[in-house]
Length: 366
Image (cartoon, rainbow, N blue to C red; front, side, top):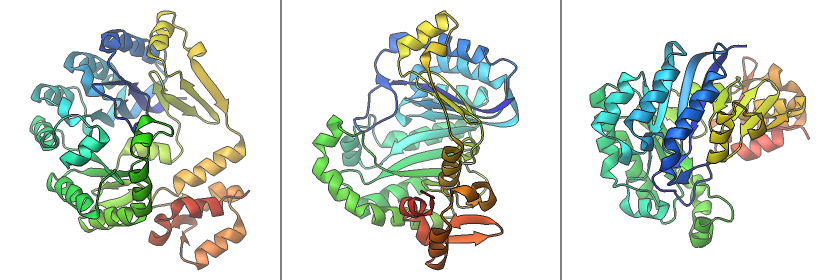
C-alpha cells in the first residue's frame, strides 16, 4: 500500500513553553545532526512505499535546527512528493530569517504554519513565548518575499489574564497580516505541570469564559471571509490544510521521528519519546523495539471516525458510522437543532459546534 501522507516530528525547541504537552525538549541541540541522520534512516526504510500528497514537518520547532539541516530533510522528502503535493513546515516566528524563508521556498515548501499564539506582550509572557510580537509580522513579510503563498497563523484563547478585548485585538492583528489560514485553539495545559500550578486560579476563571471566547473567534473570522471548516481551524476558500484533512477524514498516514504516530487501517503505533533511543535505533536499523503498537477494535474505529468527522463542517457520511450512533439520541439532537442530516451526511449545526463534545458524547452508542 502506498502512503500518501507523512508527518515528521522535530522535537527541538529554543525554549519550552510550560503549557505544552507535545514531545519536545529545550536544548540538546548537539544531538540535532545525529537526529537528522536517524530520520533519514527511518525514511529510507519506507523507500518505494510512499508517494506523498501531503507532508507536515512539525514539532517542537523545526526551524530551530537551522537552514542546513532542514534543507537536507526537505531535499529527501521532496523527492518522494507527487506533483502538486502540499508541503508544510511549522515555524516559530522568532526563528525566521530571510535565508530560512528563501531556503524553504527553494526546497519546495508551499505552506508555513507560524506559532503566533498572541500579539499581546503581556499574554506572550504569560505563555512563556520567546521573541517579541513584532517577529510575527516580520516572519510573514519574509515568507511573502520568498514566495510562500500559503501562510497559517496559530492563535490561542483562554490565556491567563486575557480579556475579550485582548482576544479581539489578537484577531484583528492576525487578520491584518492576511494569512490564508488561522487556527485558534483554547489553551490546554498539561495536567500536574508547573504551569498549571502557577496559573490554577486564572485557568479556572478562563475556563468559564471559554464559550464566549470561542463564539467571538468563530464570529470574527467568519465575518472576515474565513471558512470555519474544522473545530479550531479557519481558512480562506481552497486554503484548508490538506494534511490535517487527511487525519480528520480517517486516512492512513505515516509518522517518523521520536514521538511520532502512524496509523494504517486498524494498526497504530508510536515511536518512543526519547531522542537518544531513537538515534540508537537508527544505528542498528531496528525501530521495532522503539514502537508501541496497538490494534483498534472495529467499534473504536467507528467511534473515532464519527468524532473526527463531526469536527468538520461537512460532517460524516452516516452509513459509514451507523453502528456507532445511538438512534434515539440522534433524533433528539436533530429535533433540538444540534445536528442535521443532509444528503445522507450528518453534521453539527452552528449551535451544535459550540457544544460539540457534549453532542458527540450523547450521539455515540454505549
